[in-house]
View (spheres, rainbow, N blue to C red):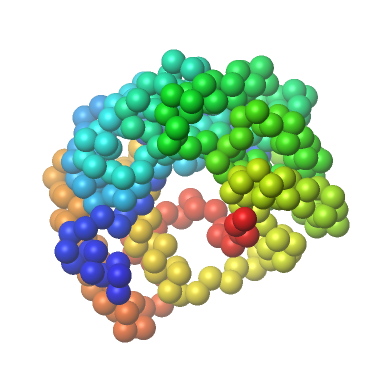
Length: 327
């Protein structure tokens, strides 16, 4: 009902997820960019005109813009301009997710100055060997330099949020405890611990979570306790979450699924994107909603007349949902 009210009155309620370029500077072993065949299919890049058209069409309805979802946003030459556009259209919260290897203090400062609210730095290891093995093409020294640059920029912009995203597998989970040492002087606002999931035909293929479950109290709990002590928001899976994920069991109510699909809008320059997403040159978000019968969908959902499906914009590329604990 809340979403219906926001939708009917033209208010903001959409989370826009944007990959401006289907490219990455690294070949992380747990990612589909480690698959040569997948990379051949991922060559799209939005032009500056495309981004401006999308901004005009959908940013006025966006409550959040997330730049970098399945690809690396810092390879896009116009990243700063996207942040600027979002703020010009009044988007309340703008965030990027990045491996950070192409960023330095000056680039970070420019992003923060132009309105970037949050940066999520993805890492798969806290030692040089693990980091550079799982994040092929990456530099552990660049990661440490980025850590220091983040602290310097946050001193200038205190509201600038830092999030660390650590994807755990059986080969890197033991290093998670060293988070306490790596970030002892640069406390992030959020630590998100994500269990490995199968994302395409990645080079890394050990998807077992058995070791993590068996040694949960030794491997994960001390990090959760450290975050609590240091007032860091920790987003992490419970043992029950891990069981369900490995068994591919998802307990998602229809109500949550409907809310997710209505607030989620993914934009990427894959082939035929104008036909498959929306054509911002010829339709506004209001036009898009009319074409996809969004108001009808919301009303039918309120009346319990829809199935478990979702509107057209729900992307098939999304990974399995997982309920996390947040402390």
